[in-house]
Length: 332
Image: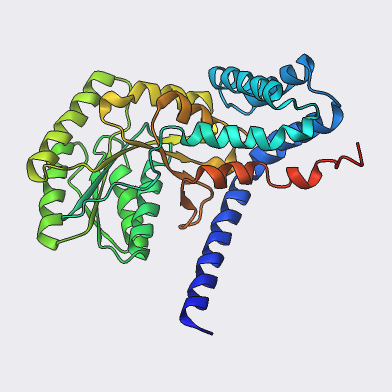
């Protein structure tokens, strides 16, 4: 077998593996959402007001978000008139197309911004319990698999056990964790971590931060201080500030996204625990309302279940099986 044929087969195999991860990770959402959509598209023989009202309810039930759903339904109405569509089955590929559009309309890439001239610094923010530390550990593993050297900074000095949790992940992945004792100044930890990253010549520095929101002013001031310390040492850093959200909390995740907002310098989103919820539509709602790219999604508990977000893969996985279940023109 030629080198190029082996390479092509390897790429195809990896693509299929990613596709399967999306399908498996979105199983709960698909079973709930697609079951209802399939029923609607097969039960109703024409596209009328009752059809649109039911589709609206299904989308809102999947946590796609009221504002987004209203826009989507209006777009679908326009398409039905423009293309003179009569059969509900003809509308499914257009719905898929519109959902992909909602997830990619900014043109921003899911690719992480990497520093071409030295250390890439990635800051993680988010409330406690969303899977922030786990995300850092999994991303460290991902970078190591790519052959990069990684260092972790335990900047969440406030939550009991946060430093130890990150250290456990460091041991699992095989990367060093820079930390101080609980209650230390997070900015001081970041300073130590940047210095260590420079001395060791690492490729990537992943920084954890405190996740308390009880006093938002204090948290934002703390983040500002961390930014200043990092930028003084590496002027172009942090290259990404990723807001980690628990997809299973639905609309609450959207509220958290708004609380942090772009004022905290967030450049992208990570949606965890998608495999544990039937309301995966929250990805669409958050993406639409926050105008921030989704960089990664958590599709399971394994080390490699943190996947780079792909809008087409996401929507394809959501509708997997629907096309086969659609009745043909002869069956209708």
